[in-house]
Amino acid sequence: MFAQPTTAGKPTAHPTPGDVIAQQIRRLIIDSANNAPRSQQRRIGPSEVGNPCDRALAYKSMDWPTAPGADREPWASVQGTAIYTWMAELFEQRDPKGERYLVERRVTVHQGHTEDATIAGSADLYDRLTGTVYDWKATSPDSLAKYRRNGPGDQYRIQANLYGLGMENAGETPRRVAIVFLPRQYRLEPYVWVDEYRRDVALAAIARLQAIRERLLALDPEANPAQWAAFPTSPDAKCFFCDWHQRGSTDLSRGCPGHT
Ligand code: SF4
Image (cartoon, rainbow, N blue to C red; front, side):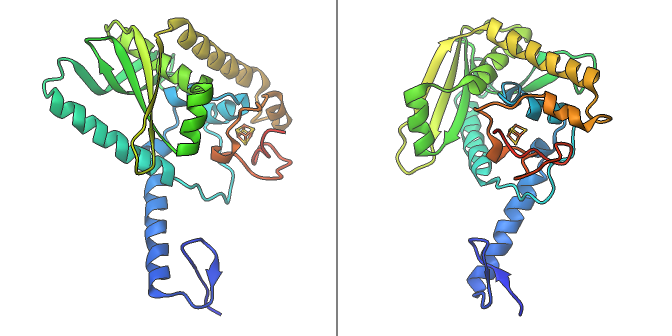
């Protein structure tokens, strides 16, 4: 019998017109978001350098095929992108000549020997008056409460300082980094984490990435698939969002079962 997925993705034998339209909209959003240039970029960007999982960084560095069958859920990042666009327009309107605020300014964090080895990205906002690098994070209320309790974690801290280094490379004088957590809920109660700009944090993260790339060259997991296991995972790995996550996989060249 013809069965159509509902909005919850579960098949039903008698889809309503609303179910059909909901499924079409869902498909449109998922396909568009997963084919956006950002999701297809090969280069490792500042938001990824601090990924606590060496194996995920190794897969990404090799542009390794993502695990088959997984339907990525991009909705949270779509909401985030919409919020960042709104914030960018806000600051562009406040300072149309860009004298104080640099909005979505493209910066080179690290110039590699090849284009793929170069780390570059667009910093959400830089305030030249205070020397502050801002990074917006749209987040669920639960996660926001966690960040408020425990701080932003290494990956976000590294990202903010990498953009600080990128600003420094562009001739600016960053003094602070700020991560602004904006809740995805009706009530606006942001949490802002601020720290002094730490060039050493950025440089250590770049050195770690370079070490992973050197191990890739030495171990050559493409020719020796067992060597994928030599790239450690981390208890902080975000397997749910990982493009190479494949539950139960025993072949790391096809997918990773996650941190165990
Ligand atoms: S699934 Fe988890 S452990 Fe495996 S590579 Fe991805 S983030 Fe790392």
